[in-house]
Image (cartoon, rainbow, N blue to C red; front, side, top):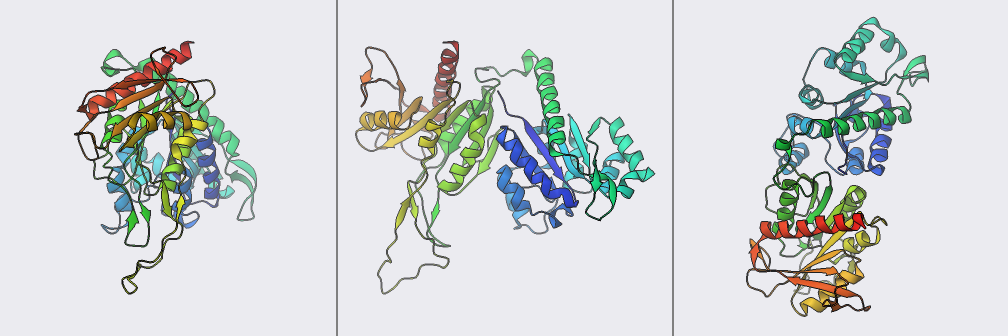
Length: 443
């Protein structure tokens, strides 16, 4: 089932730190969250806190101060905007909501990223007021809250108690459970609405993956040696991006975890950018539970330097200083070990070899507990890095009497594919995974 997208607005209240727990809890439920912060909110909690929990950059400004600011770089890399976020979100939540943001919403003011995105959003929306009790009880604030309610906002009433200003009364941010219950109800309502209003023209031509969430990794990883140099490989990400594009075209909700590449982001795909193997592991870890199909197409570095030099490593009489390498997390093995036990979650790995293709691929399929493994030989014409084509062998566990015996006596079905465009190959791989999942659930 596709994950729920929550857009969280955080405004300048002492209760802003509680919103971090909301993002954490939603992540545990398999929801995807994006966060937009007002300038005042950033005085209470740093954007880094929310970015670490949501695994995506925080939206902080409509117009970054300089072209090379972090906001500008993040926006350029992710291709995001207040309109994109409004379209992406299933539920919009503002928690905590100050008197200021409530007044702006009530009067249609759009003077920053959050308020502009609010005006562009169409769907369930939840307002969670938090302020001094006198401010809350002020007739102007009450009129603005009533106006928001008339405009379709669900109001999660604040709690009564001792406030940060030492006053006692109504104005504390509601209990997080109450907010989470309201969001869950809104998410269920949004899902039912989507199912009830979808028409045949809304369906993709090939909807084998409709209603499923597909997680794809792509590209290389980079392991810094110092501020100038890093260890990496020749992967361009073309195969992984083709898989993400095709999965989206087949009706899936797609999360693409991408290492550094020179490719445009696929339309309609939620892309998470990472650099190192550890960052890729963290991103996969955060999105894996909601994935129905996980395809690990990235060329992840097996090793990283044990110590990264804070300064550029200088030549010392022409002698290269020793570099000790340590092992990176094995993302594919971790995914294979953490699949749902009911068979509803499939993991597909990739293997690029330079010798003994089938033997090495069979071993990897079994050791990593994959449901499918796509193997190719770097020496094959048209099948190496940077090509638009690929020639692979698709391996799956099989009980077919003609299948090849694996290391433990189990049988492996190996199906060589002709040289083809990577997008066409993506369709073949995804079609097989979709049918494999259907067959397992039918058993």
